[in-house]
Amino acid sequence: MPARNARSANARPSSYPTALRSSSIRAAPRRPWRALLDRHRLIVYTNDWRIALLLGRRNDNRITLLGGELSDIEDATFGLDTVHQLTQYHADFAFIGAGGISLDG
View 1 (cartoon, rainbow, N blue to C red):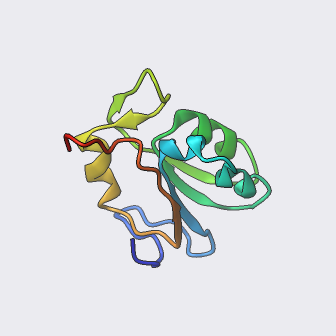
View 2: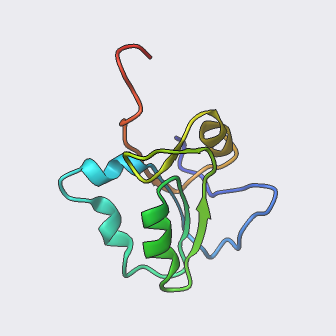
């Protein structure tokens, strides 16, 4: 994903850094999203409701929870609605997992 500021129909103030986050990052050994806990005024787009609650309750962060079908395995949304929503944003940086990729496509 290109490193550009997030822009959408309801653009946020440019003083807020923007991050995209996929639920599969929880499986990563270092959990890089934890580095965001002490950051202030972040804009985060996530499909993981636990991350949305964790980061949304601190430091004047702004959280957008992506829609879609709720997975009972990953506590996150997935599907075409989630993917379509992601196409509307561009991020300064992103944590992206590959949990939804299979040999069958």
